[in-house]
Amino acid sequence: MAALPGVRVFLKTCQSLSCQRPFRFVPVQLASTGPSRTFSSESPKQPVNPENETLIQSLSLMGVDLTMARRRQPGVLRKDCTNEKGLARFLQGKGASLKTIASIVSRYPRSITRSVEHLEQRWRLWRNVFQTDAEIVSILDRSPESFFRSSDNGNLEKNIAFLTSLGLNSKDLHRMLTTAPRTFSNSVELNKQMVEFLEDICAELGGDDPEQFAKTVIARNLYILIRSTRRVRANIDNLRASLHLSDSELLVLLQGHGAEILDLSSEYLKKNFQNLLQKMTVLGCQEADVKKLLIGYPMILYIGPETLNRKIDCLLKGGVTVTQILKKPKVLDYSTQNITERLTELQRVGYDFSKNGINILDSSRKRFVAKMEKLSSEEGNPEL
DNA sequence: CTGACCGGGATCTGCCATTCTG
DNA sequence: CAGAATGGCAGATCCCGGTCAG
Image (cartoon, rainbow, N blue to C red; front, side, top):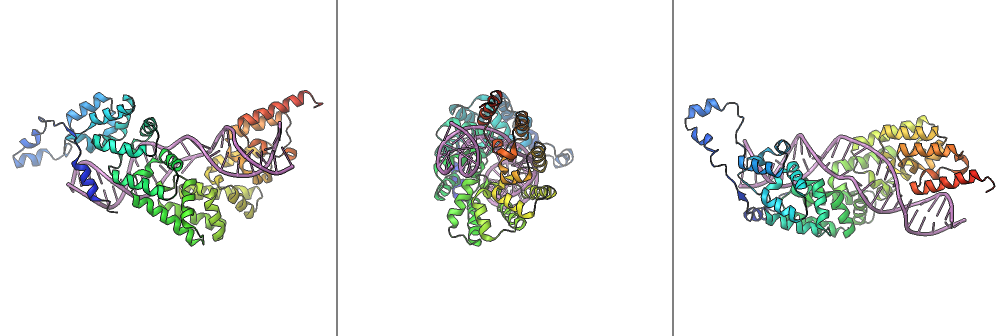
């Protein structure tokens, strides 16, 4: 937990921040020497500590949304020493537009407290994973917090080393830092906890290669490391309980597509499961059918109750049977809109699902269109 | 060539609560 | 104590195409 006080001290001392003091604004406080005065007049403790006017102006000039910044990290706006100019120059040098920079500072004001040395070091570390500055800029634009929330570069370095040591290759790391950049701001301890947790799960379930297991789960679900072990555990427990899975069945599921739903909010997962069970029961399915469905296609739990029901109803109305859905649940992967359109088109040409199956619903748009063209032309020349 | 099977790619932040630190 | 750092949460799919057996 105690993450290297030494590193932090070091970083602190080498920050060369530009100091802008609102020299003449402070005295208000200092002047209040008379104890009685201070006591009575300051009762509504509005300006405990006033904002740094010079800083405010500087930010304003940069186009920073002060209302937003104030709402997010009011303390930053009161600081005497900040580095907004250095930050702006630095980011510009990396190819960020002024608008992007303003947006970054608006959304994560603390970014202006980082020194250029610190920024350069952090950037270098990110460049271990990314090939270009542009990639990093686009992520900062998306999620400034991921880059700036932690000032601990040592920790970041250790994270990269740790994640690499798990056997994640550079492609995995790249995807991870792209899609779940927060992972790299977690303390290594936190990330280790999750990995150990996964390894324990594997061992508990009688798996023989916990490390491989953890790696597989993480590679399959890059969001795992920004979730709490509590959540992941709840999801695993729920899956096991609701599906009545044996240890080995569960192990297989988690290493397979089951991994992809582990990061869902556990309440959401539970709700979706209950809805699915109910829906399928109403449609005449046995629990065993549902279990098989889920083992074969866990991603179905990703779909919210309303969407799922709508899709299923839509398919049924279009002439698809429950049995066909059970056999080819991947058709639920597509949007209701997409499904509806295809069903309509298929109906128009008299496509027979009972004869041809429903695989046609699970194909890319390009392939579907090509197929439809063929069907229509055959309709035009019946002798073919 | 065709279709079934399968895996992969995109996407996922912004806020609040708690704990640490000077 | 203020501010910094860190942990945790809610939100909620869709689509494409390589490959291989037939």
